[in-house]
Length: 113
Image (tube, rainbow, N blue to C red; front, side):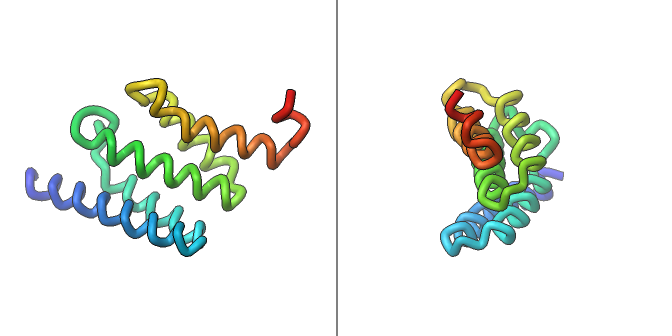
């Protein structure tokens, strides 16, 4: 099972790299799917230990794609997970920014209040 864990981690990393490339090409639908696949390769305890940084990157990038796609449901789910499991307050900054961005798209006046 140690080999499977290593393979899954490697696949999650590769999905992160591929998703970032898709985002650079402004293909946010494809990028989201790639990040989602990467998240699915993570272990159940991915927010603890060695997988934390990779997990945070996959979730943040998937949230960013959700914002650009206008997918408020996935954006909310991803940002809630980040806020729930983040080890440091600074780790929630990107997801907070994406959440505010979503509010301003839905109701520009609400984001100013």
